[in-house]
Image (cartoon, rainbow, N blue to C red; front, side, top):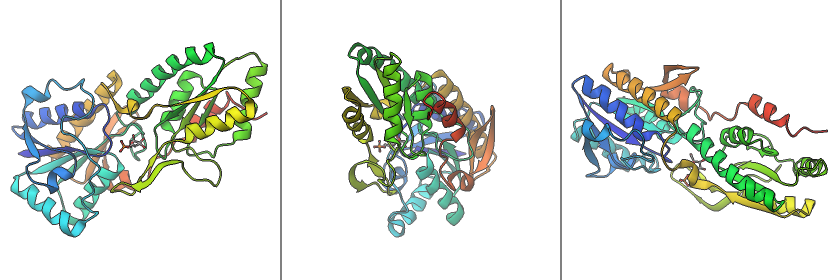
Length: 346
Ligand code: F6P
């Protein structure tokens, strides 16, 4: 059996751990793996594959990024041209199955290929945003929130020295998982997420109260997708990628200038950006990614295509790709309700 592997969309710590685990299971069953380079682009264009042998994959569990490269290529954007190319390339390479490791966009393509062309694919969910349905958590998320925590602990000392207010903008696009979890973990004075419109009057009220109580600095965590009522998301520029996503960024600076104007306290913003996606995976993410990879390898061997591995509680389960990409998983608001008890409305 010859199994292709690809990683698509924004990269995330733990991708290599999945590759390693899939390769091991396939080898255990007498098969071999081939790496498809740069996401779906690697099946549309020529000469974008390479063999993966265990000697190489065994050493990559702790490596960040992806040894296969990634892209946001959407073969359905120019479907008439690219889908026949993709199907022909897959046949030419004599692949029996494909493991697609990605977020909603990459797995959305996998789902359509399976549904419309009976393409033999198994999905593995990845994203630092943790916004994929069916799975409780995705690998990459734990690493990302730990990076935010470390950054905030560094920012805290300088913020306190200068009696400033610091706004930290996190990733997360449409879901507040990163902002909420890291905000709770650093004891943020306020957390702003895409799911709840920003109430700047309340933010300022909380900050003034804290100052009056003697806290001379403040930490605000803002998700890149947080919005002011009726204003929409703050974007870096209007262009969209092949899946129609705008490039987010800047809401932290908008919040900082509003807060400074209303409180009279010097307020700065740090946009953490891609730092949250870089570097080695945490131990938790290495284990989760390995368990996902082992389970995906088994699904491939058993020819259970159109499926995706997922985490339910502590168990790895099998889900359908269709259920996984049906809608985005926004933050479970019970976490935000708990976080909000530290910045109550009085
Ligand atoms: O999907 C993960 C993510 O990190 C989002 O949080 C962020 O908006 C986006 O990717 C950034 O993507 P890119 O690296 O393509 O700019």
